[in-house]
Length: 493
Ligand SMILES: [Zn+2]
Ligand SMILES: [Zn+2]
Image (cartoon, rainbow, N blue to C red; front, side, top):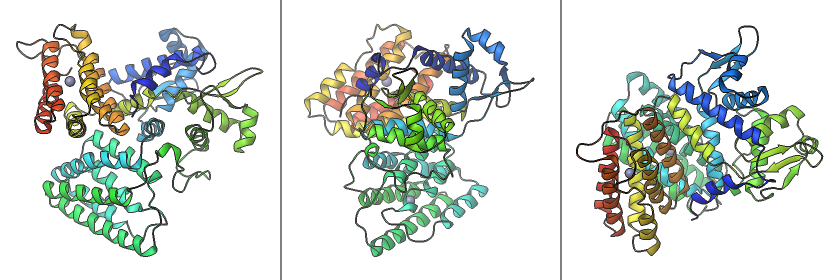
């Protein structure tokens, strides 16, 4: 698997023909500044940030750049511009859709398979089931029983709908952990779109539906009874069964057509989003390369058979995710860009900030994911490149400047995630480390461990983890990583 450092570095290069104009980048920076201000203010939904003239003054940009920035902030669902006399930029409550769509872009571009999705679900969902069993309330019990009661009938050709849909997302929501909820929602949605069982008979599908039904009812009973251990075990066994049903479909999801594709007639997606998705899917499938001109605006109107305003809206979405950008002028047209994979991480982290994810929520999920990585990498310790890569990632020296420790420290965590060979793990761990980073930057007065500087403590812990992984001692590596991550909840790095 290629290192994720490669596409990130490439996205910065760009050439004259493949990078968006300066104005777009400046607008993205202003959008980020507005978002940081909203987060710092505690995300006060409904309050006014300022009028257009005030904000143009405050951020020191042209009206054109400011309006472009507002489009991004609106797209991220952080704030919305109200017109009129008492108008201005107003803070709004985002829903998960913006974060989910950004995550989808990332995962489609990084060669994710359905098996990768299900392996990570097998880490997160048993944990969610156990948490739900511990925290479920009377009102939630009704919601859970309703969710399982609504699943009836045999699945359609090629799919096992009840195997990924509503109940799994409901259980994750009832865990009370916003991080688990968002991650499971992203993974369940992608599974639903891309998982396909090949060559099934009616009898097979009926048998599978019965098995899903039985597993779901058993799971719900355990959660309602508050039996965390059984709920965790049942969910784990259920996901193992799902993995077996989908075994053998190893093609990356980005190169496949979604199950029941393209609902242009409306429904959940706005038309512009559907068009943007069709264009993106064509790019991911390799129809065009970076720098290619896809078509002129008029050409796109004809090609996708929609209005000019829908095309313009779709182009904005593509520009926002750095998938393509519109060049004006005689040789103009929609050009394929290098995708900005960091946008997916940023959108997920932003949404979790809005949901008020606490350090304890983050730690629980981070431990589960990183210990999952340690398991995989320790089992492959005999491969020479494993030790080499890990040793390269020991970038925190005991004498490193305190301000640099956090950034350098992430390198080891990301190296372990990359060596685990699952792009979903890399993506989710990057989301969590970026959240940690922002909060550490926002809270300067963190209590250091006694007797050790931050750099000394991290350098020591990282070295011990690498030694255990490299010697193939999975138990010791897990223990050391767990202790190291626990220390972060008291003292983040
Ligand atoms: Zn299920
Ligand atoms: Zn660390």
